[in-house]
Length: 401
Ligand code: ASP
Ligand code: MG
Image 1 (cartoon, rainbow, N blue to C red):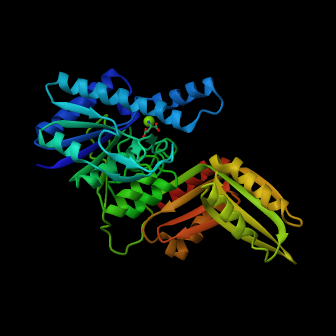
Image 2: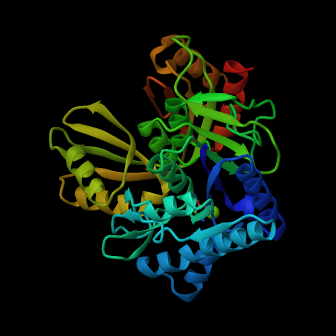
Image 3: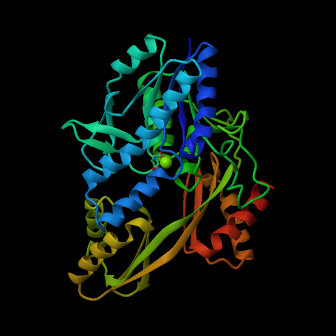
């Protein structure tokens, strides 16, 4: 008997009708002889609505209470889904993250899973029950309820699949899989039947929204195959697993991200370890740097450029302002209109010709590239975020057709 972990996102559970449809799919999977664990998100926009509600009560909701509030969203969908399954004659039981032993660190709103004590879940499965688990939540060692951060139920699903040594992990949303570009933007975007773990990780972390980057990372690390599919049809979706192509280099997808910001510290004294200090201070605030460039306009001064997520802009500005205060001279400027466009595919970053064609295509659109980074699997250009969409369309035409 195979063990399948299925995850259903908010749009798959948006109303009573959708919940019944998902219940039917789960019961079908069970009746085919599989053991099933279903991880659920909150219904529709419930999580956003709860955040808004909290902000109406106070401009700065406390993190612990916010976790208490947000975990309620998944509790609603898990219990309704268990009821809908019972109504179809299936036997289901719902659990919060804490009840199934999802142990996290103590960081509210962005907890990381430390371990999963899955005995209770295994028992339910041994009794032939369908287990429904609230996604995106856990409990700390000091018994505080935590959440994994927005979009965290994908991570719950992959983590459970790993802990239970599941045979498959299926992530259901309202799109039929991973596409070569955002299909809302590029009408000719193609659905990709399969991707390697590494390709998926790069696609997810550079803007593809089908699978959360943390879940993609977890799947890659544990070699847990994942299938991304739609709960609205029976399309086979995209299978993510071990790489199958040998050394042929192919651009698989083009992603874009419009939520970046660039901070420039210009004219700071050379050799003052400013960059090292700034990076250390940013790390204290848990601000990740997407990219860093060093410009030397000449003389005794240098320019430092940092690309970060726009969500981190205010604390980063504060950190850099303070660093600047300690220096003799220098200026801080902020560009909050930064976006990026990436080509993803195993080997693309090692092909000089691909990078040259990318820059040529962008130059043809008169797009000014602010910076470029590449790895084995990805080439990313930073640019004004207003230009990212036409860049994606052009690059899709150039590399994928
Ligand atoms: N409901 C949570 C959110 O909207 C978790 C999830 O959907 O994965 O962020
Ligand atoms: Mg959600």
